[in-house]
Image (cartoon, rainbow, N blue to C red; front, side):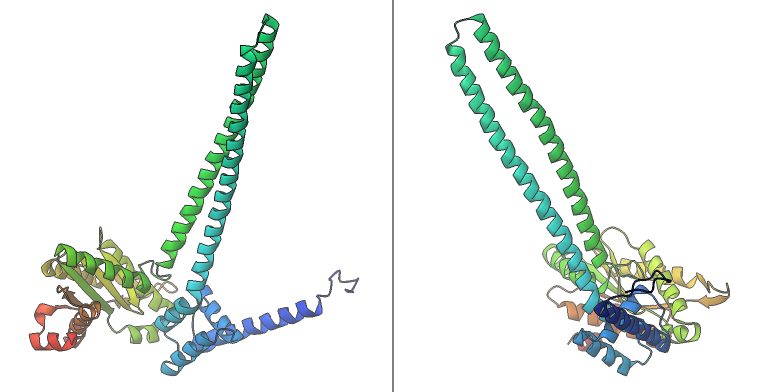
Length: 365
């Protein structure tokens, strides 16, 4: 029993054990956040909490490997592990839940329709019965009685139809809402949490679709690979939160410079990609330059102190799709151009026309 003076009931043994265990995991997760100097965002906490419970062996393995590679656990690594082991599970659960609700609503609609069908059948039988009675009427009183019965039956059917119409309208509204929730879930699964851009998973799907379209139509297709210059040193000097601010600034600039079917995505960490369908190389270079200049002209200010942190610059590599080549070849050629932009002093744009042809062939091999 609980202590009467405190008014608190003592939890059961199993409940107390669960509470103590989860609190211990939570404290360990917070401790790891401090050690790694990671922001205590819901995603980071969930990731490290899952690590402390050790229930997901593959997650633990990937996280240990990432820590061996980089002891501070990069933003890119954390995001990759989260999306691989945790994010997909949440989305699938949401999809299953919405699907289950739609299925339940459809079952109820079918039951209503079946009931309406039976009611309509009964109404038809009633009309047939009254028709038989009409043929045998011999007095005004009998006619009045049959007509009264017909009126009551028809009135009941009309009222039932009103109820049926409302029920079907409510069901349609409910299903429309569920479909909207499902669409929001789908959009969420394709969106990068930090930037709001398309995520890597959706980029991988989109590039396949656009290459297929380019193959069929023969229209040009360009790919931009964009990297934030000196991001690691910037992140180390000013902290991860400011680093996130830089990433969001670049992402916002990308959003405002793409239109229509263009797809801007966060490729990983401080690297971004833009797919430009129906766009020639010269136009793609213009887009890249616009983005580079737009980012460079914005002064970055630290939110906590309002102190100026200077300007951010970008390096960009551009490749144009060649009929018959693989996605890997297209990406590798853009990556070679990006590397050349970095080697040329950063803060510039390099396309495949700037590259010696032999080097371009080597990169695609």
